[in-house]
Image (cartoon, rainbow, N blue to C red):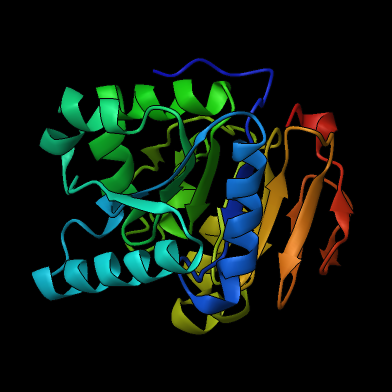
Length: 250
């Protein structure tokens, strides 16, 4: 299990949706620039693991979309074909992450993503490189897995899946401005009912919240809002606004 960290040397971002899309290019560039300033290489690591159970056509779609974004940002794409735990155990893939400017966990199934990465060389490499200056972003499922646990809102009787606990005190509800149109009220209750020592953030589509290595607060970027739903006074934050989560150690 990865240790709970007290420092965040690289930038870290939680994204509601929109990985690799033109609307998020400027934001992704800012994460790359953060790491380049710390001496990292102009490489953009893309991990499609959360989509590992989807069709080959979908995997090819994500790869092409990521390549177009990397080209636009004038950095090298490193698309790691890690679709399950077997891939995450491959030390060759772990080594390819080293010194990259941006490491991106894209969307899909958060339970599959967490179960695939936990206690593997790839996850250890992600954490180690983030600790020394690489930027790390998680979109949708990629943001959800960074918490201590992931609720099973599709199968309510199942216990939560253990998360990767990089940000154990934060639970993310991605696609927040559309999410509750997709799920029943009972599932919404499960998502919002977090332990007392957690906060819950609803992050709208094409919107992100980031903590940079030079900042003590988190800042919102994107078209819509980040909603603080539990743990601190509730509020919806827009572009450029800052959120102080230091009371939770984040």
